[in-house]
Length: 271
Image (tube, rainbow, N blue to C red; front, side):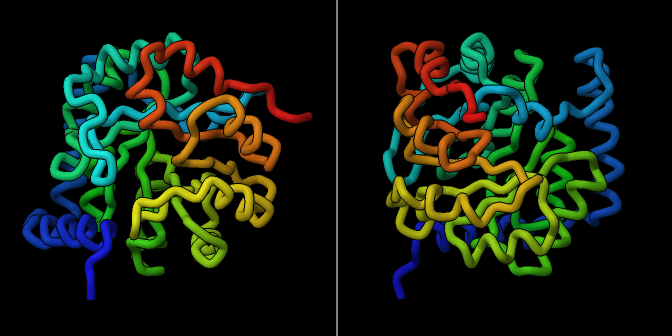
């Protein structure tokens, strides 16, 4: 059987997790120390509220920092995460998403830390979370939110990692690709649900996917549309479907005018 993109990436991360000999309790103590050091340097002591940042009067943009992708290859290999974070903030991004996967996306924990130090908006660690230690590491590196991909996790893992994120004070963006995955996601009572229009098995984009799933997202859960968003028309269609936020990466990291591209996405939400 041919491995899909998702299979290959998750297998890599599970091999890495299996080789990690830290105990969860030891990792949590170290994470508390690391987080405290980061906060002291920043002169702040609280996690930034990722969910609240997405609930303004306009469509919120989670602006992503990544150098490459498995499907497109190089996007912006020379980007400076600090400079990109500053540009995103100037353009009105509500939150940032920073890839920390190095083999497949060219990211790192250092990228996240540099981006977060350059801005005051909340930051999502965008990676393939496959162990409790991954959640703790997101906390240690200074993230305000962690990604949980339903297709990559069992129900028990999803519930456990979501509970741990909440315990650590992190938001959890629970990502789904269809209605069946949404039903699984809703069992953990998430505050945030992302609908990825890119099928991570094939990396193909279906721009109607988020619209189809939108009606199944309950009131009180913030819906985030992800992938395949390339301008104001896409943003308007998703806002009309009920989304409060969009996560945009390739369109922004390849833009010649990042701030203008962001402003085009930040539409007034339907009343």
